[in-house]
Image (cartoon, rainbow, N blue to C red; front, side, top):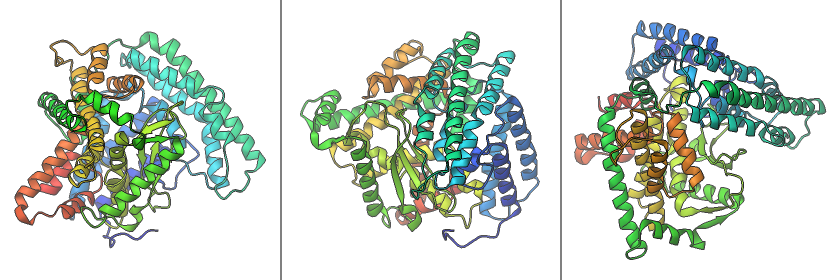
Length: 559
């Protein structure tokens, strides 16, 4: 076990939080896989309506126990505040039946079940035995999910047509011959180079066939049974959106004010990009500046091997430069692995370390089929976002602080607004610290920041059915045009992103809104401290809290 800070004596509040982790691991064994702790890692949880009922009832019991248990110190106070907020959201979301329409193109059970396989260890025969077991029972997990969606049709709580069509296509792609499951089974190998037993290899092959068939079956169900019952309305409405927003931010915000702020922030980003474009070439538009940057061979990478090596090199340089200056970076956190993901969906994401750092934090790039060239000017800020000082530093710091934080605080608490808001805050900070002094790299950072500002406007606008910036309604076609105007990326990416916002309400704005909250907390802390303000200390104390909701963060840092 990796040493961290001196241990704090666990309290009764810690015991309740640890009990909640144990409950989650028991109800959904993929949670054990996700956080790297022992559990039934060859099994799936109950994805049927009964599973959702059990989770809500467990949340009610845990919340009652938490309310009856006094905090003994500041650590407990933060735990109680944040855990109670999460438990309340579990209950409210269940009461509002949000789980019955939990289907979207990026983060719903159909994707989560498959992605759990990406995180499963593969070092030993036992590890591959667990994978074989999960492959063989994937059909049971998908059947439970199907029951949940069918329950929604009976209660009139259904996902949108647009999401059903897209997820059906994803499922059929996952289930095709030679697809993900076949590749997983055929590529199975022990990390020490040893051979798998033939019986286990046969189990993996058979399990892959069963899992692929299960995904094809779900795809056909979505196309032929759920699609005719799905709603043509993409907007989830204010009541549901308020819950989604609160869940992703860990905070309650004025959605109408945030919409207007997003419009103003988007204009500010656009003006900043135009100034940089003019520096790249006098009188150049942003589009012309991008054309010049894309044509620069010094900013181009060819092939995924070059991409991975560049990611690792850029990350390692950031670690070396930042440690001891703007941040404290303990030794176990300095290890970050950059990898090309086994999937081809186009996403870039981070997975945290296991609780003892035996599995390091990892930055993954899921490269779409046929994509072989990459531009460093677009992606340098992505490395900072996903690595250090972004997600890796933030999430790993919570794990490192195991002597003070219980397992829930280290591994499971928090919100997208805290995590993604920090990552955007980190991007801007790297600009302030001189790591993005190159105009191309800075334009790339602003391109991402502008996209995140656009998402605030689009997401809230769509789901609250607000008037768009041009005075009309937020249709899908208008949303596509709006993103094309504000994002310089491949049109297939833009289409996927717009579908993501239409189906995953509240998540996309959490990045930029979270950044806004992080910056406001830092600015207020600096104003209070005056000349004695220490940026490294601020970062260390804020990150030592682990990932928490933004309302909890503000209270913990500012009182």
